[in-house]
Each structure stands twice: as structure tokens, then as C-alpha cells.
Length: 147
Image (cartoon, rainbow, N blue to C red; front, top):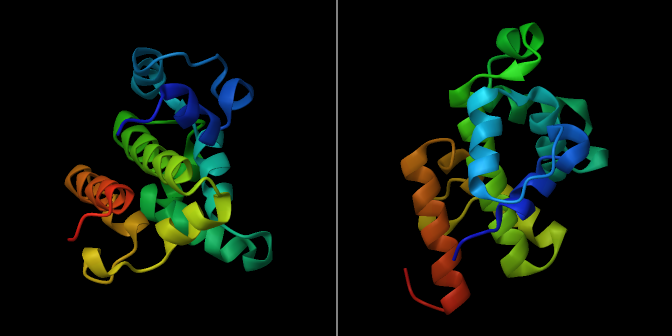
């Protein structure tokens, strides 16, 4: 199951943050390649953190994706960080399309999962291979298939 580029872009802040309307994966790839605005990362992280959890949880999540010093120094994310951000946003958008509820999608991404050796989908998806593993978990759940 694939997620439309438009849905991924919405999780990243849409036109307001990305500076353009994203209609397809080619346009999203161009944003990643040219340097995604770091505000897209901030917008995505805000989707995953409850307002009552505070700034510490936001910073901790962000630091898993990009080192603090790098984040403070740049306005745009390099390709590697942009790809990680896009992958996580894509998986969150996929979870949103399956659960049809922001809170449920956030709970899925941020809580340990038995099929991921009790790791969170967020942490597993920090790598490309881990992202594929998380996608498989979502798709198995969607189709009611066993692990």
C-alpha cells in the first residue's frame, strides 16, 4: 500500500512549510534532494508529541533524526536527514490512512510493538531497512495477517 505524495507533504507542513504544492513523488524527491526546510522536521515531530509532553520530548525525537548542533546550524536538512524525515513522515501518513485517527497513528509510531522486538516503529524506521520492516507490520495489520 503506497501513500500519495500529497499526504506525506501534508504531514511535513504542506505548501506553507515546503514552499510548494507537492503533487507527486518526483516533486517530493526534489525537495529532499535540494534540502528540505528544517521546519518540515519540526512540523512532523509536532504530530508525534502531545502538547502536554513538553519540549523535552520534542527535542529528544528530533535529536534521533538530526544531531542538535547540526539542527541549530542549518536552515535546510541535508539529503540523508531529509530522506529519514520523509521516510518517517511517509510511515506516519500510512498509519494515518490505516487507522484514520491521528491519535491512533501516533500511538502506533511511538509505542513498542511486539513484531519489532518491543521497539517503537519510530526508532526502527530511522533506517531504510527498518522503515521497510515497519511498513510490513502496518500492511500485515491492514490485511489481518499473522507475523
